[in-house]
Image (cartoon, rainbow, N blue to C red; front, side):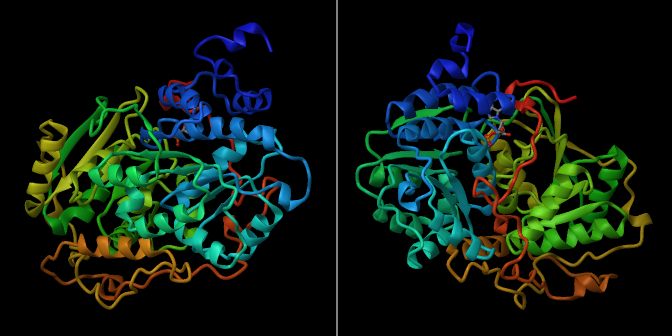
Length: 489
Ligand code: AMP
């Protein structure tokens, strides 16, 4: 290493181990992001930390790098499971986020003897049990499945020195508070606590008071600020013409990578299906899809096989998709904060992005709430060359219809993932009730049927062991341009 490597503004300046620096160089990380600049020294100093930061800011490395550094003196090359107790526990609200965090942590620790693994619901427990029994220092988990492993006595948290709650606000939204409290009670009293959250509500602060020790606070992005380089527009479209309008926008703009947000699981599936019927490469992700289905959709979206991903807020949360040119709000979110999260998916790092919202007459109040929150008036325009009356009317039945007969939305996590139920209730409650003109596709006549659970021993990514003991291997991606790194070619 040369002396210039340790210049201020470099990762070496934090005193990170050469094996960690090597991994960062391989990832193409040249300079720390603002949250890394602030968080790394504080975590290295052993302090508790509350970080206000969203996915996309580099927060994962902000906590993972100092954790690896802190655990390195205890790292062991021994094969004995007893030499690899869980020393750091990272909790995330969703399977996707757990998987992404685990892939990142594994890539940073790849040249060290530290072991990482991820456990989440919806997939076979056996491979996770085997990885836990073999011993792992850094465990990434969703709360429900973690407690399942505790109950089965495949996991002992008695030597956990560091706890991370990632996306704490979302964990509370999803009803994980009782699980979190149970997990915290299983940990040694003497430990370091880190909590990351996009927002810091009173509820979050109350939770922090119960388990954190004199935490330092850091914030990298202004709360509820919308990206300045995102152009926001609202089109007034009647509810029954929204599906046609989405197809029209995608075609007219030649969109090749767009997330369309729907408020309900059933609306998500129906819209994806309708777009497919229009010849658009679309797929849906929501909480009732199996982990395997979600991974397939996400991979398809990343590699271009799928151009339009229709998603609920919960399913989209934590997706590691950067530099999206456009997002479309098929439904206006009922919570204005969700609007900020949605449009935060586009226009990052100087790239310009479009956030398009379709507003029916009944949704005007949601737009008003959003404008109040972001303190900006969103331009209202008419969709050019869109004449829905000229087209055969398709499937205009309201999303709220026929929901009662469908699957409850329960997660297949042996009934343990309470948050999923909450998610299903939330998404159902968000379904607007509308009049129901006659549909033309009998898909729209059928009650919603959730995907079957992943079969035991399925080849779902999480079930595949890898050398790191991690479920999913992550293809190398270009340096995130959103963080000011190298531009994508
Ligand atoms: P996160 O907010 O942790 O989900 O990170 C967002 C993306 O930025 C991920 O794809 C990371 O691999 C990437 N990233 C994190 N830190 C850096 C860095 N210092 N330089 C370049 N890319 C980074």
